[in-house]
Amino acid sequence: MGPLASAADRLIAAYQRRLSPRKGWSCAHRVAHGGDSCSVAVRGFVARRGVVRSVVPTALQLLACYRAAALLAQSDVSGVCCCGGIPIPFRFPLR
Image (cartoon, rainbow, N blue to C red; front, side):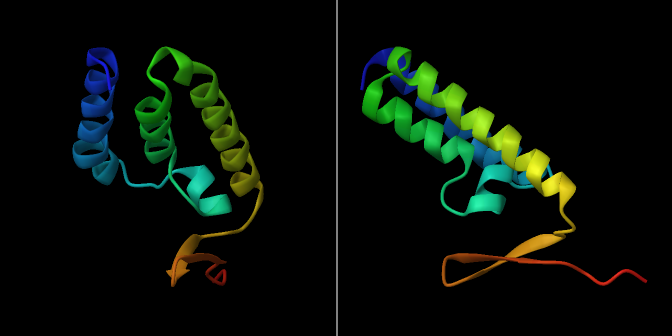
């Protein structure tokens, strides 16, 4: 991994450690489809491809996350419970 990719990896790792846990919500793509969050996916792109070759896959990942957020906003899903790595959407009854 080159110096630019290493710097990007450290920045993403810092985001995952310090900011992401405090923001109060999870990646919409991970909630809607399971699998990796966007930060994990982008970190993998950078590690495998380098920064420059990761631009397009990163943009596509963020677009997919945007679409997943729109999908979740239209549904009445209140959260996700992971049972053995399988995300299971649930909703609370209205009172």
